[in-house]
Length: 84
Image 1 (spheres, rainbow, N blue to C red):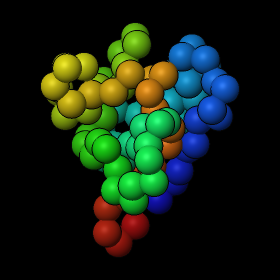
Image 2: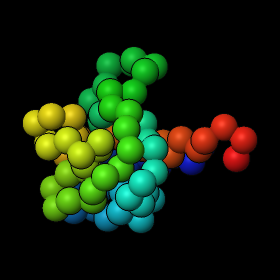
Image 3: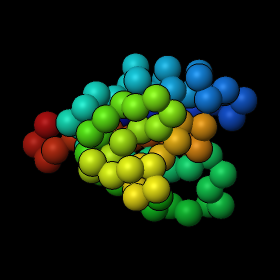
Image 4: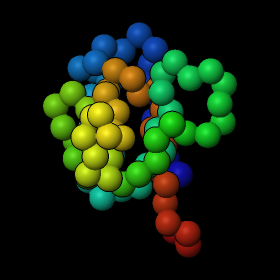
């Protein structure tokens, strides 16, 4: 697994740039929000289907349906398939 943690003081633009550099369309990711309250489980799990202006699209879902805004992302982990 490869992990990216967004600095807490990063602007939305900086967070978007970091995410774009870290993931590509087709990768399976786990995403934790910036303001999580100690939960061990990710808030979002899915395949990156778009790197859109303003949000990371997961599983072809709209922002309201299961994707996440860049300024809400705390950590992104790329999940590698078993055996890699």
